[in-house]
Length: 293
Length: 291
Image (cartoon, rainbow over all chains, first blue to last red; front, side, top):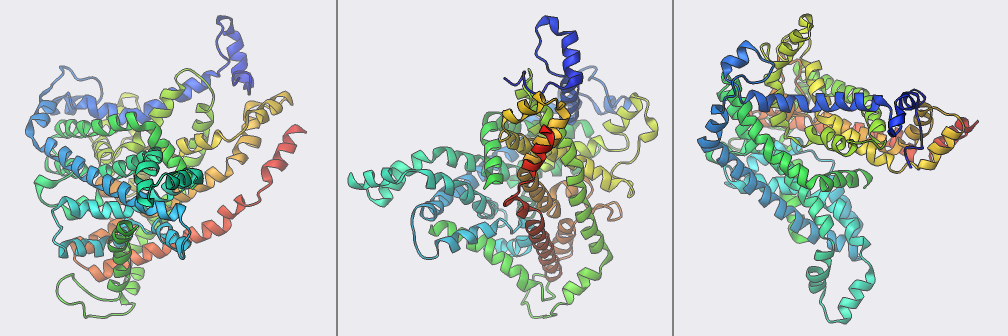
């Protein structure tokens, strides 16, 4: 269908010239632009990965070009040092903690906000929506002191609890329409069959709103995984640092070892990229939903 | 309900209220908070040249982000919206930078932008040595460098959101326009872009708020330097709070940051987003095309 639509004058002429091979009438400019955009987008990451295979001497002598010879010491060094793995495990623990908290608390809050009429329902919802307006930076100084007072400095909970709290508004805003869309008949039928409200919630609503919960969960996970400010201020213990914090520290501590830092950083890119590629649709649809909402 | 409310109240509402309370005291975070100074912290912040610089920087970044990313984002989204082999791969590729942690992307760019780094070496290789410079070390270009990296990082979000908006633009309009002899660009300009209005405005809003709260990328790339050339309200705030323990003063800065975001959000709401209610511009433009 689309090949019929909107043939650009210049593009269609070009396509007509080479068109005897039965090509679609796509302007060559689309490819030129695609290659350009893809190149600019990926170049820094590719450069970082390749440079990890070079020695600092190579990098100094010829900063661009392929590694010659390929050196695996940097990557092997990072992978056997233990600290990289420690950071990665810490990041996973905090992200899972945050995500579980956000999704469980979020769905428990979105459920009554979506399906029950009670006094102050709209007001309560608005409180959470207002939360979208409060950036973490505004609250960070009191949070810093509060976490210290609660004795949560240098604990995973000290990072996960505030992260979850700040991710809640978005979670509720995305989840509520999901829960509202479930037909009332389902609830009535469940009640007739003797299910309690709590039973309906756990046995019907939670499974049915699965897609919404996965989307919000993925967004919370990515947010937590990438988070920097909270770990920066709340985690000083080297054994508890998260991956972004570890990357930042490693790059300042080994500032002379450019190739080593690039190897460390490239390895830190991998989990995020793998996660993104598997969850790509969820992440994108979540963001689009957030914009529409 | 209760767990969410509790979590939200303790870790969001209370700290925000506390920030407002701290802001009227001179306090280093230790001992009792008894040195009430009224609005003095606010006056101090607003008359501090470095803070003024940070506000200017934030506003510049907010405006430039929209001015740079919107045209490029639109162009790329319009191109990617057409069916061609490799289209799906491209959609994934453009979004990769957005998914990387700011810190990770920032460290890579910082090394690339060193005087002896990859960017300058690349410029030399293609014979543009004269453009090589100390990208993050030179106060006159540092802010532009940060802008460049931000564009790289966030362009994908604009493209993905615009592509989603494009799904709502019916094909028939283009068919009609091309039958009437409109070129591809004419039909994009007169039909598609006006219909994308709501998506563009929502994206611009998100971009603006994000620009005002900018911290991670700047902290990694420049720490606000050199010579405060790239300082933002958030990096200024963290400096005052954690490095100098001026918690009252830093809280006043936080509240000013919040007020500025709130006012700009309100203005945006009033003058830009309101157009979405009862906007009939696209219809008028459609008529023009078919003429």
